[in-house]
Length: 223
Image (cartoon, rainbow, N blue to C red):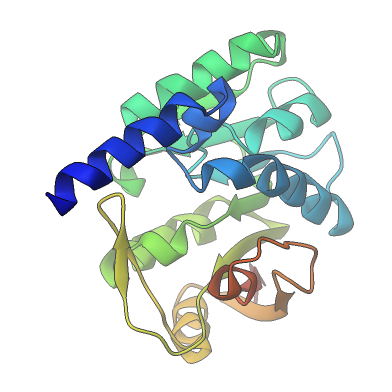
């Protein structure tokens, strides 16, 4: 009975959602999609992102954060990679609806990081709310990939859970909490150094969700 009531409640909530809320609910809280979109481009601009730089959005999903970045960057400078084909298709729809196909972003579906081969080195790489959903072995492959693709003066940014809390799940993905020392050791292993920029809340990410706003933004650069 309780399960049936939850299903009915979910259907009612979905019925009243806007089209964009329905789409972006695939990658996070439906009501927070615009705040999270604005946060990503504002944060990257604050770190010095320029239109002529090449950027990779790891876990680009529905292009919730990607649309303003594609619009801001010069033609062909946005690289979005995503493991869920159905979610990336929603991103392609979002791109078309915003009339940004002429920007020719590179939208890449993949299952393993070693499948991705790019000729260009990247100036900026971002994994927004992505590392927190990766198991340790996948994070290790991700950082190894970043070390290979990142330009000598480039930077990789990722928000992570550093507070002590019990791991959980979200849409079939784990929600993982690790120590800063874990990321420092992984960075060192891949010729990178990592620094803490600040909590998401301090950087302007105000969601009202305590654990989310306490996540910490890390910057990885070549050692």
